[in-house]
Structure formats: C-alpha cells, structure tokens
Image 1 (cartoon, rainbow, N blue to C red):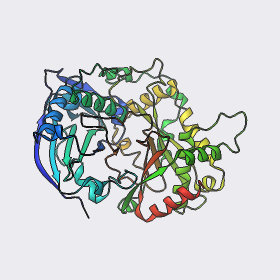
Image 2: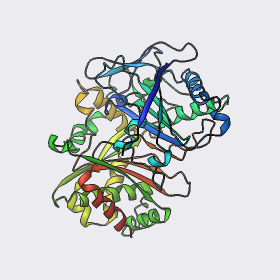
Image 3: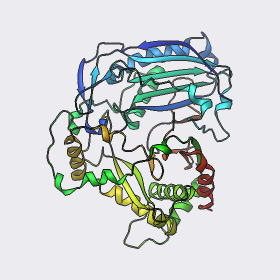
Length: 449
C-alpha cells in the first residue's frame, strides 16, 4: 500500500546574500552522463520536543540555513541552459532552490524495513521524493529541489534532488554537510571551501590534444552494449541487500584464493563488484557466449597531476567499462571477475583522463553519450558511496536512521553503501528487471556461503 503524502506548501529559497551572476561553463564530465537529477533520501526519528514547538520551527530552520548555504554553493540556485552540440552551461542567476513541504499520515516504520533500508524506487515511497517534471523547459527547471515530509509518528524524510549535470555524489555530500552545520547553528568553518572553477577540467577550453592517439575511446564507449527498446519497458524492482563484515571478508578471501603471488590482493570493491556481476549473469540466465559490460565510475580527483582542489564542486568521475562473456564470469573463479574490474580501473591514469576529456570535446554532439551508461540486460553499473560522508548529517534533531539513493529505476543499477552502524557491514542497493530479482538475491547469498 502506497504511503499517502499531502503537499502543504512549495517555496523558492534564494541565497541569503548577493552571489556571483553569470554563465558557468560545465566540463565534459558534467555533460557526458544522463542529464537527470541525482536523488538522495534521509530518514530521521522524532526530533526532540524543543524542535516541535512552534510547529514550523523545523521548516523555518531548514529554509533559513539553506538560504545561507546557497551563498557559497550558489550554482545550486541557478538554471541550466542549452547550447550547441547537445551541451549545457549553468546560468548562475540565483533563482533559487524549490522547497516542498509535505505531510503523511503514515508512520516512519512503514517506510523502513527491519534493516533500516527501504527500496526507494518502490511505488509506496515515490511521494517522499520531489517529482521532477522533465517536460518543463530546462531553462526554468530548478537545478535543486528539496522535499521535507513529516510522518504521523513525528519522524521526518528529507529528500534532495540535484541535477547530475551540475554535481556528483561527493559534491552533494559536501553541500549537505555545510547545510546541516548551519542548521545546527554552527558558523561552519568549511574544511572544503567549494571550488567553482571548472576550467581546471578544461571547461570552456578547446581540446588539448594530449596523447589522444594512444587510446581508442570510440571502441571503449561502444563496448557497453545498447539495450533493446523492448526490455527497457519491462517492470523493474529495487532491493537493498545487507552484507556483514564477515561475509565481505569471505568474498575477499574467495577472490584472492587463486591469485598469483605477484598480483596485489584484490580490494573489497573489486571482489564485491565482481560478485555482483557474476550473480546478475546467473540470475538473467545468460548463454555462455553472451557479451556483458560493467560500467565502473572512477573518481579522478586524486588521479590527476596535480590533483583537483579538495573542494572541487562538479562531476569528477570517468565511466569505464569492464567486459567479458557471461560464460567466463560464471565458470571461472571470482578472482577472474575481480581482475576484469581492476583492469578497467587501472587504466585511468593522468594521461588517460585528459585523453578521455579531449575525446569528449571533439564530439560534435554529446547527446548520444548522455544515455550511454543507462545499462540494461545484459549490462550492469556499480557505483560506490562507501567513502562518502553521507552519515551523521545532523540538522539539529539527531542523526539519520537511514541514508541512501532516493530512487533506482534503471535495470542493472547498483550502489554500494557503508552501513550506518559503522561495524564494517555494507548495503547493496540493486535494481533489476523484476523477474530476475529473487534469483539474484538467492545467488548473492548462496555464492558467499
């Protein structure tokens, strides 16, 4: 049964002070992914009584602190603008962030399972996150939309959706930390002052031509196979699987069981991602000769020479693809899948990054690359949020009981998160065609034990 939500108000929150106005060039990494909003959702138990009286204190505090946070993070109050070649620029016009107030007669526990990990893409949760109207011209569509939902039990859901053309998950986490600190009444001496100069990634500049001939990026992009339109329409299901620290150690040991002594040990990410890839092939019942691609997102912040500024505010991930046949993944040890993951990651060097950016700059039209990583059978995409500071986002009424992606609707989309318990356990948020999810979950646990 769906959670019933009533919209009580909608406001536009603008920066508290005058901010820089003008058009900000976006980097190729901003514009080569899907031009959609990146949603997160944060659930909180009932705030202390002092936060509940007067009744609008929470809303007032959030809006006032958001207004102040938008001063240093002013791009979030702007609007995207289309330019030639399927590209965009960001009009920093301070039009503001859309802030939605909502209420629900449901209780918070209805939205949280026993492991405090909802499947946010399920129908019963869809009203807890802002609805993005992509039929509205992009020039008037807010870059940032916030929805605050109060539950009958006093609990709170705070959902934030920001255009993925503007920032990535790391930038979002930095902004949330700043906003929460201001809401708590802190002066917020920022350890990561946001850097809005995207020219450090070549934004607004012509291709540099650095070692572009050393890599065949066209072939790399073509490796991620296109999903047939017929399967795109199939029903999807999202599920969040728990993985204990002990289970993760078993996976790592399994991945390294047949490793050559000259090869460095496979990491937690490489082992788990390889495991997910294998389980998907088994659940989807692929033939042995079926090619399959795995999209991996590599943060280039510290791979560039020199590294990007610590507070760089924008997209910094390069999408690379590991490939194999389903038969090889299913018949060989886990270490083989982990090695394919590592191989894709290791090629992302300083030279490779600039060559990749140059390749994107040389495209007359980026539109075809903005849907490239929309996965689908037989492919997968795995993103890791384990190093993001997504927990402890305390707006003054205590820490969250769950934080995670606000929506998963793409077949093959996987997000790995650390558990809020801090005990080394993980949460794996997966979206697959509904007919394959039960089989995937069975393989996921059976192949560990």
